[in-house]
Image (cartoon, rainbow, N blue to C red; front, side):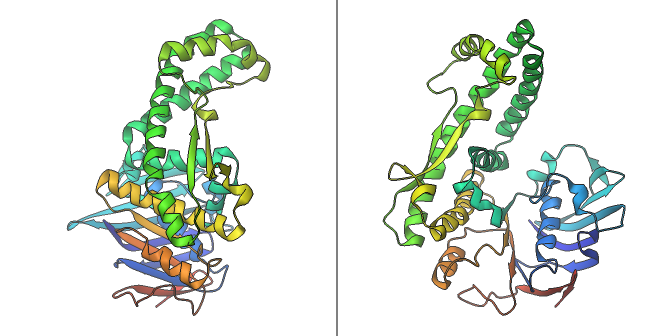
Amino acid sequence: MRFTSLSIRNFRNISSADVDINAEDIVLTGINGQGKTNFLEAVYLLCYGSSFRTNHIKECVKHENGGFTLSAVSENNGIKEKISITFSDNKRRITIDGKEITDRRSLIYSFPCIVFSHDDILFVKGEPEYRRKFFDQMMSLYSPLFFDSLRSYRGILMQRNAAVKQGNKEIISLYNSRLAMFGLEIMKERAEAVYGFNSIFPELFRRISSADMDVNVRYQPSWQGMESVDEICSYLESNIDRDIVLSTTSSGPHRDKFTVMCDGIPFSSIGSTGQVRLASILFRIAESIYFSEKTGNKPMILIDDVLLELDSEKRGLVLESLPGYSQAFYTFLPNESYFSDKKENALTYNVKEGSFYD
């Protein structure tokens, strides 16, 4: 699957653009602040229905305009579809061939997309919530069952937390079994995903960093050692008073920890700035490889200026390590090229003040 054309109206600094993207590789060049990342964000929105830069897509509206419109034509084995997203009056509307889509999962599994951005460094050195987000996104991309379990768990957790804040022990207990059931499924899936991720990432890091370091991810469930719904329910019951004091559910998958380790020590405390940055990029490459192994499909890849801090040798190794992809978008500064060989049939656009020139 690839996008063959992209239309953008009133999005960030892009007033109006209709861009041919019917190629496997699309390269955007230009100085900072011209709209390269905005272009990638538009592509991502069409794949996910949400942004990788903000939780409030109202921020994507071009100044003094009431809304934006994005649309793209996709092609898969000769079959074409038109995907559109409009945002106006604080409402988002998604359509595929004119039919409104009310659940974003229709996009996610039709147009799997992985973005490399500067904020990815938080997966390595940030708080545990960032690594939870990474693995949840990675797993949701290939497993609809995990996506549904996570969504159900979050809904029940919200209801239980509301009961906790009210201090109503009887109602709190009503949610425990369902929270435990979905939580147990999430724990099992996360443990499997980390195992698979660790079959790829450590060797990838050793090869590209040229460092003899065993860097991997350790998964520590909040409900460590609990293997049944009854065990978890008993634990939740025994901690109701604590939850009420804290005004929140103090245990469960939403408290799980994923820690990047190096020879038994947290990597963020011993890795150099360059090694941490490289590890964050390789997180995404390992995700792409794992996705392809799990599904047999190729993702769309968006690479947004993340290679700038690497030396030229590592830049080349990183790009050579990318698995097969359906389509890739790159942003570069002027006169930069990270490809070891010229990519045949790549489309290159110079980006200036929200406009695109070939």
